Length: 404
Image 1 (cartoon, rainbow, N blue to C red):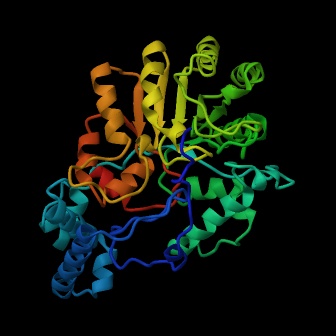
Image 2: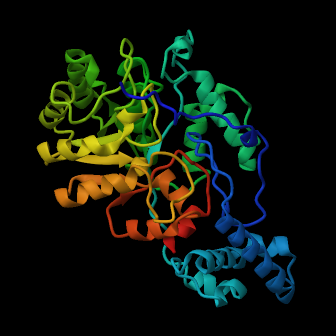
Image 3: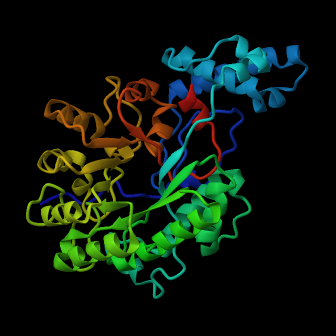
């Protein structure tokens, strides 16, 4: 019997207090609306102390207050230098950049191309009777709104929220993605629902929003997922045909940990009876990209979120590309002294001898966590194939960290 999901999102009392950081880079984890952050680590505290000390030293020389210094390029350079001092030299930054804005600008490089492959909003028509609130492992509207409210307490830029479902609407989604962030291209995705046609955002609506954004911008700025739920058998295969032929979906989104209505647990990608008919159907439709939620366990049983099942599926379907969302990260926890990342390290060790080239790691929220706790891991990931995706739709220092 598989153990129930003990990694599901739980609101901790500290999350309700909010936090305003005095330094440019986050020196503790914040939530991406999916997981409770861990407390500040000793190493992160050292980074924060070094940043503040450098600001005290340089600000008077430049005729600035400490706050003014930290809000400018010198503050960002000082932050990256502090990270290097504590964790080792992983960021390409020189001491002169902290005192000379021109030097910082000269070495900033070209703007980063950001392809956010995991964007969400909530459809106005989702779960009108609130039935999902009582279904085990389901995604309720109140839970989604609660995640946004918790983020508002942690992020002062969300103070204008109204505290209603309008904050999660497609109108606000478009504003935050294309006006308030540096996103170049986005991919609309959706959390699961009782059935694919009744997801938080049904595929028909995702593709409609995609088409309208691309029509208005007269360019390909948005893509959209289709949604699969192979436990439903023939009904799901028929719906895949419709999504591919009529909606022209760009890729498939799969939640192996989520259970469709009528089921009490998830499924595995290497299940030849349940998942392989779905993969064969994808091959026939010509839509051969699967984005799979792995790690950050959701649903009633955590183990179905482990990425190990991708190995056999990728071997048996070499013409299908698999994108592992969250890089299979089990949960947010302080890094082990060995640098091991639960589930992610194990999966990478399994993947290496298999010699697979059709598995990709999505690093959005994972990068946001590791860059301030274990930048060594981020440095190693620079050698592999990566996609950014996060659900975090505001400008942040992560783009600067990734560029450097």
